[in-house]
Every structure is written in structure tokens, then in C-alpha cells.
Amino acid sequence: MVVLAIITVIMLVVLTSQSTFNKTIVLANTAYDIALTIRSAETFGLSSRVLSIATANTGYGINFQKTTPESFTLFADSYPGIGQPGLCHPPPVNDPTGPNAKPGNCSYDAVQGEKVTTYTLGNGITVDDFCAYNGAWSCANSDSLASLDIVFVRSTSEPFISVNGAYSLVTPATAACLKVTSRQGGARFVYIGASGIITANATSCP
Image (tube, rainbow, N blue to C red):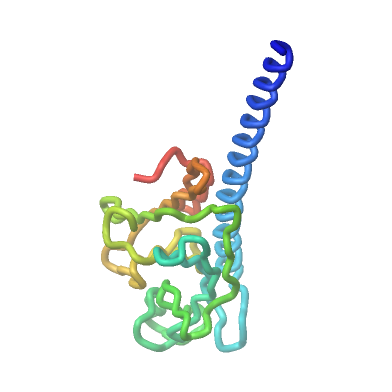
């Protein structure tokens, strides 16, 4: 009986440890998948992936919403079009509609048909919080952030970060952080910074 009890205890410890390990791996993999999707948006934007003749030089970005923490959207920043007001990329002075002009306001406009793909997270994992840095950090859970957009466009690896659907040309946000959590416990942090830095193993979000 004593031997049986010892074996039972050992089995419980092993199974619990294995379950915890599996949860940690799934959470880490999801954080890396999110980081890779952001990297894909950077690649699309820097390579000027063309949706149509009318949307050359389109930037690509990722949109996060506080109301839908279980999903995020890859989008093509094609609205407003080249030559229209509200652009986040100042047009060339001498040729505002020329080949170097870029469309977009650096934020996701769902009604304009900008969605490329919506990704849904599984296994009880969500983007529990997101933050943007603009001289100081502000986050969705502790401040008034309702949405976060991270956009990349030719010919710079710097991210264009919009908060609550608006990009500031005067004082732009220069970094962002995502907190990815599981309802079973644990957290991972994805950091996006200057010069195209994207890491899935940041120590924390502010």
C-alpha cells in the first residue's frame, strides 16, 4: 500500500508538471506567432506589396482592439488614397501624387475594406493588454487605449503606431507592447520598437 501511494503521488506530480509545461509552450508559441505576424506586416509594407494599380506603396499593419482580445487583424492601409486629406505620410512636396506618394492614415478602417486576415487565438489565450509609448507609456487596462495599430510602409523599418484610431504626426508613438495571457495562467510580452525591433520575449509591459 505504501509503495502504491508513493507511485500515485509521483504520477500526480509528473502529470501536473507535464500539464504546466504544455501550457507554457502553447503560450510561448502563440506570442511568437503574433510577433511573426507583425513581422509579416513589416515585410509586406517594406516590399510595397500591391493590392491593385490604385494602391501602390500601401503600408500593412496589425490592429488590436480592447473589445476583442481573442483576435487581431492584418490590414492593408490603403485609405485614404493618395492625394486625399488625412494621410499619415506627408506626400512629396514637388509631386504629391507621384510614384513616391503613399496612401493610408496608419490606422485600420474596417468599413473601407482594408482587412486582409483576422487571426483568432485559441486555447484560452488572449491579448490581455496593449500599450503605446509616447514620452510615457499608456495601456488599455490602466488608461484609455481602446485600439492599437502598428503599420509598416516603404521605405523605413520604423513602425507607425496609432492609438485609438489616430496617428500623431507631431508626437508619434515610438514603441508598443502586447501582454499575451492564458486563462490557465502565465503571460508573455511582445515588444515592437524603433528600427523594426520585434521581440516575443520581452520581460514585461509597463
